[in-house]
Length: 179
Image (cartoon, rainbow, N blue to C red; front, side, top):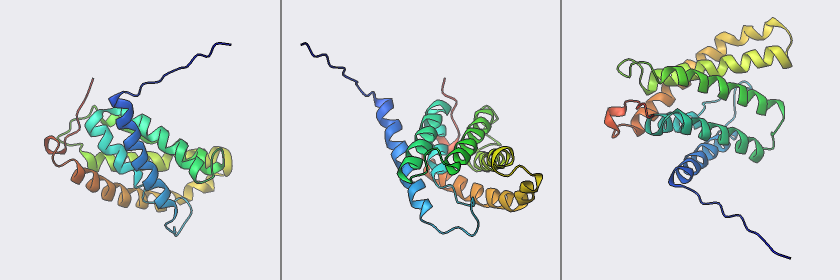
């Protein structure tokens, strides 16, 4: 009987994505321990990591980090394939779509703070739409929009400022457009 082995070699990019994803997962798990006044209102601390990765390495790596964070975070918190997982995934996909559009906007006007706010609003929008379509089949779910929008604005600004602080040494915090 012959044995064959498959050897996977992690590239520098793979290792970098893993480090960023680990940081985002740790922030997400720590955030889950913070009591929330209302279900669904969380600071989104892991989004700081996504913004830093987006600025330093581009949208593709930011998407990998976000996807790994959602998947591994849900596994660690015991919510994989539960409604919370799908709400998190919907928010993450909407946020990534918004960031994909934002990354092409002039960095003079759209820096980490504005991109964070846009991503936070997209995240909330994606979650509300999924909640309406799947969990609460009634338009009354949108009555929560002002509350969630306020949280998105507040936490989007705070997370954007934190990301900008991390990016201060990187070409004045401007988002790069890697090819």
